[in-house]
Image (cartoon, helix red, strand yellow):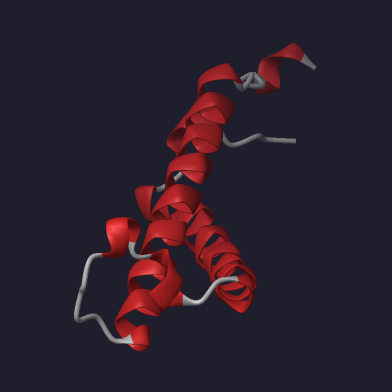
Length: 91
């Protein structure tokens, strides 16, 4: 059986392996976070920022997605760095 080296995975496949799960996690995290906290209550130091709730939800979603991307990329990096390459001639 021929094994594909994990270091030779196409970049597109690596990107989708990181972006898609982090997108789904960002959806869930945004829903859970903003069901507990009102965006207007999150403004620090009582600043008067003119940001609509939709803009706050969008900013929060992209922050959660960024955290998910960073975690997913770290997992992918360490997985590929420590993966063993199976040589078909060893068997």
